[in-house]
Length: 215
Image (cartoon, rainbow, N blue to C red; front, side):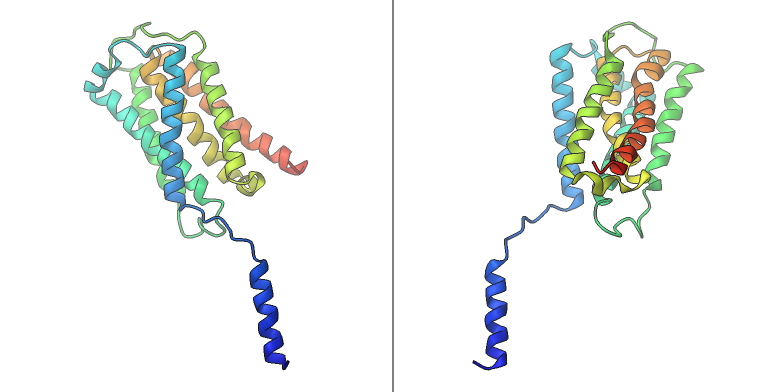
C-alpha cells in the first residue's frame, strides 16, 4: 500500500467515526418560535390564574394604548433576536442592536405621558394581587430556559448579551399585564415595569458571579 492509499484509508476511517451533528435553526427562526411559544404559554398560565381585565379588547381602540403594546412587542422581538444572534461568533460585529432601543424608549415615553394626561380612565378593574411577583417568576423561569437552550455561559460572557436577554424575557409578562391587570400609571410603573428594571439590573450581575465560579 503506497502513501496515497494509506492516507485515503485513514481519511475514510476518520470520516466513518464522525458523529452527525444536529443542524440548528437560524437565529431568526429560533427567536420567532421562542417568542410565539413564550407569549402563548405565559398568557395561558396568567389567564388560568385569573381571567384578563374585563373588556380589555376595547382598550385597543385607544391609539396611545395600542402604541404602547406594539412598540413594546417590537422591542421584545429585537432583544430576543439579538440574544439568539449573540451566541454566534462575531455575528454582532457588523450589526447594531441599538436600533431596538428607540422603540422601547418611545413606548416608555408614551406610558409615562399618562402622568400628564391618562390615555384611559384609571381603574381597579382586573387588579391581580401578585402581578409584580408573576412578572419576576415568569421572567426567571424563562431566563433559566434560555441559559439551557443557548448553552449557558456562551451567551453570558458579555454584559450586553445578558442584558438583551434579561430585558427581552421580562418585557413579555410585563406587557401582558397591560391587558390582564389593572391599568393605572402608578401601578404600571411600580408593579409591571418595576420588576423589569430590577430583573435587568440583577441578572447580569448574578450571571457574572456564576461564570466566575464556573457555572
